[in-house]
Image 1 (tube, rainbow, N blue to C red):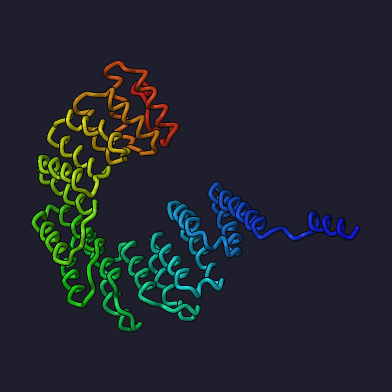
Image 2: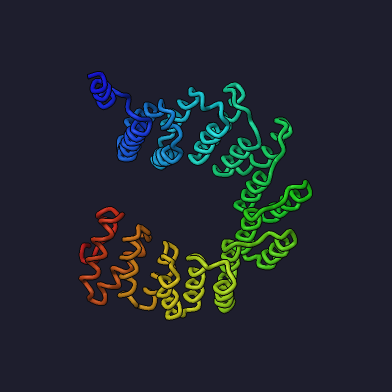
Length: 385
């Protein structure tokens, strides 16, 4: 009888296993997150987010924070962003620099540099030690919000007052800032300065400069960056080569683009969709639509998927050459891939199809456009008035 009692007790009265508890908690948390993503009323979203933040496991969900704050920023609900992020400071997590960096970064991505700076200044009283990591977060927020005039004063003044030393990430942020400003010589000066101060540039440093120089048609300066990479044995990746490919396209050197992509296919790094987009762009610029179409047809063989840039390059070229059948095919593919072309470009394809009396294709594109991303009045058949 005693043995039977013990068996029944274990089966019906024992505490659930740790695995069961974790599974239930994870399922419950997933439900909460899904509910937040589906919430369309912003006031309710803010209240639910603050309530959910009481859970430590929820506060570990970085992506939920990013998506929610991005949604509010897109709707210009800046007071709601402040309400959510300021509410986070009451939790012990704020004593961890990583959590504080998240708040600073989210303020920066929302265009709220003053609040990012205020949060950084509050960290000592919130018992959070400031290191070069939180300094870099503040510097990034400054650049993200286009407060370029404040970036260098921060870089020059804060490290000494906080007894921290700028690292490679600090210099990379400043180089990015000057590249975005178009002050490429100042960006290059920061490269010189970081090497002088014993900070070794990395691939991000060089790729930032390569992109800026080639995009601004300073090809010879871009080539000198390659030499500096070689001097410190910094191995270029496909982003480095893609920057050069874009520079060659801007310089109307399509034959060199073809040559470089072929070299990459045999020697590596393996070309990606951005590499092939440069090929397509070069051929389109040269008016060689057939070559551009051939490259597009070979994407699948190279295990690559076209992206928005692919469609944005090819469709106008197809329209110009009067190939509205393929233009329609690419527009449909782009919409089905959630690559949303400009409505004006879609309207050009619709108008071209109607002009060629291809009404079924035009109607199909209008309906698909309305269904996928555009308002009912944005895309229409010419006969709609």
